[in-house]
Length: 148
Image (tube, rainbow, N blue to C red; front, side):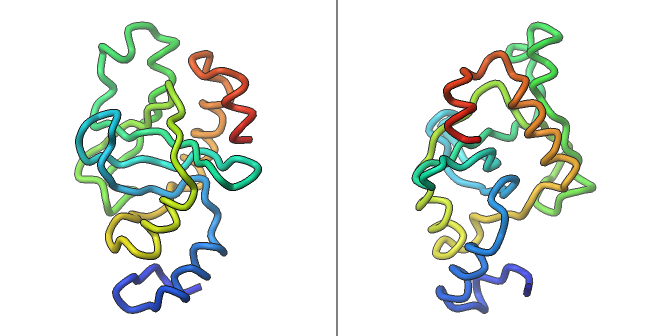
């Protein structure tokens, strides 16, 4: 499969490429209503009907206010600048909460909004993401089930 190149590919080619890629672990940068600023976020799950996406945010720090206990601190997965071109410093995937988004939005950001798609997490980080979310006591079982 050719590398992601939104400036050189037609929308049809990008749609085909999007359809063929795994979604879990995709990283986008967009305005976050939660944080009220541009943030990186990671696709963590897709609803069975492919209407909704569960995603988590990437923070530049494992904020002590967010991680007041060792249990909560374990819900912040470190990721390293050396592994990702889009990072400018080591960061943390915040797995305390799954946020909802329409599936069509990530597809549009991949196909139409050049520059919003930043890449994929490494396989190791995807496995850590899945494990952390599955074991997060801060996320309701119903929401975990919704996103597989």
